Amino acid sequence: MADPVIEVRDLGRTFGTRAVLQGISFTVDKGETLIIMGGSGCGKSTLLRHIIGALKPSCGSIRIFGEDIGVMTPDEFDALRLRFGMNFQFGALLQSLTVGENVALPLIENSQVDPAIVDLVVQMKLELVGLTGFEHFKPSEISGGMRKRVGLARAVALDPELLFSDEPTSGLDPIMTAVIDQLTLDLTRKLDMTAVIVTHDMTSAFRIGTKIIMLGAGERAGTIIAEGTPDEIRNHPDPEVQQFIKGEPDGPVPLRLASGDYIGGLLDPGRRKHIDS
Ligand SMILES: Nc1ncnc2c1ncn2[C@@H]1O[C@H](COP(=O)(O)OP(=O)(O)O)[C@@H](O)[C@H]1O
Ligand SMILES: [Mg+2]
Image (cartoon, rainbow, N blue to C red):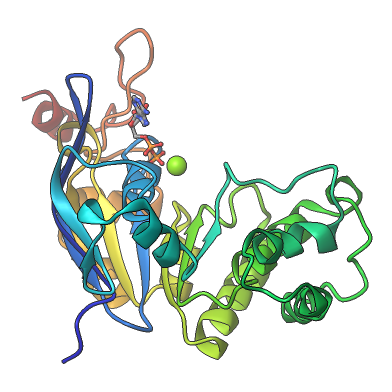
């Protein structure tokens, strides 16, 4: 079998004395869409930033297309980055530029792209995400769902082999979420991309993922507590996984108020004891 496109081995990261990621290992094969899921603050974005080389791990290794990114020279890494498409919250659209100019950014920044074809590529990518005719609008003049689609069009501007997305549907209603999910599926299939997508939206995760890893909360924060196909995750025996899937407030996930009181787990003293012990 071919080597995995991404191989993360025993990745750990501490900020100060706090371990945010611990013992993270997984692989992503070509054409797969890996979903990283888990509650707020469990380390999803931090993990993604390590995979794209924006953060350096405290221990462990990350191989992409078979190469260890930890030992790459800056030039080697820049060449690798050209094969990535990134759709991140911190890489939001530039408000002063039009929709078309935003999508053109990765093309203009990459000197290998002939300026004469930039417009053509922008038109193609906007068509892919159903935004033909919107190239002259400013981000402030279109809806939130449309802005997310522009972000996606920009991420795939260079026909990346690898797509990374951080919460591509956060803040969207369920219908617009379904639209973005369908678009992500179409793009990854049409362009034969491998994708890593962070989400805490279970419906999205099951819709677009071919493989899911879930990071834990509380004592198990920053570790993988479940890994598998969407079906395996759906039927996973871990109560924390089930609580997350079902969106139940009462369960093993410890939710503390500033006062120190739990806002979850209050109804079931048996489980509460389990958390406290
Ligand atoms: N640069 C940093 N310095 C210190 N702590 C950080 C840094 N980046 C993230 N963290 C901490 O790591 C934890 C995980 O954050 P994050 O990966 O953003 O969570 P998620 O994306 O799952 O909501 C949080 O508690 C956050 O405060
Ligand atoms: Mg995040």
